Amino acid sequence: MAQFLLASGSPRRRELFELFGWPFDVASADVDELPRDGETPAQMVARLSQAKAAQVSSVMSDGIVIAADTTVSLDGVPLGKPRDNADADRMLRALRGRTHQVYTAITLIDALRHAGQTFCDLATTAVPMRDYRDDEIAAYIASGDPLDKAGAYAIQHDGFHPVAELRGCFANVMGLPLCHLARTLRAMKLEPAADVPTVCQAHLQYQCPVFANILHPASNVR
Image 1 (cartoon, rainbow, N blue to C red):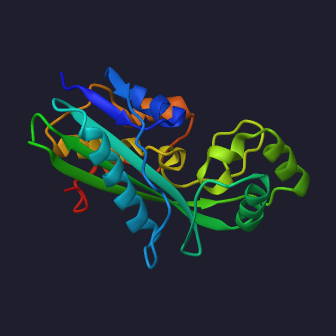
Image 2: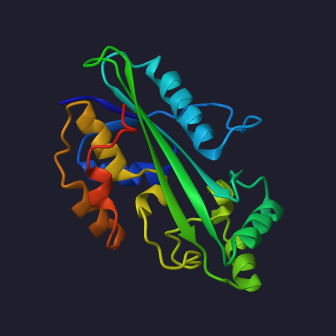
């Protein structure tokens, strides 16, 4: 059994990775998450997930490090975590009634089987937001939930329900696209014990329309 180290302090990523049924440890990475000039959102999350994986793998010599980075992109502009309540309000108003993209890059480094080789994948989901009211924004911000979320929202929040009908990967919007992770692990000759699409859909109570396409071999796994 491989030893896994999830390079993330996110409780949502821990919750999702637990669905694989493997024991794992957690270690947060400390990297500068500011975008660089001329960098696309996809390029930014790829760079940051690789930086997180490299930082954590430097202290783990005999297992697999899994890192991820997620951003919300509106009109090609990344929206990270809000600085404060006013910034959360700005983001939520900008997203209201529109469709944006969520990008998550995952990076895996296997120190034992692949001599530190890096495996990467990228998930993209179009997210249509409903036309929520101003008082809903205020109540959600008052809950404190938006401040540690990219784009200032959580798709799974029971009270706010910010997203209209979704037709993409729900787990990606939460921060860890499980089918992308499963196909990357398969590229590393590791087969998850769990039926990932089944356990993911059951856990999220979401009928996913895209898992079959994701799990087919893809050129962006390397």
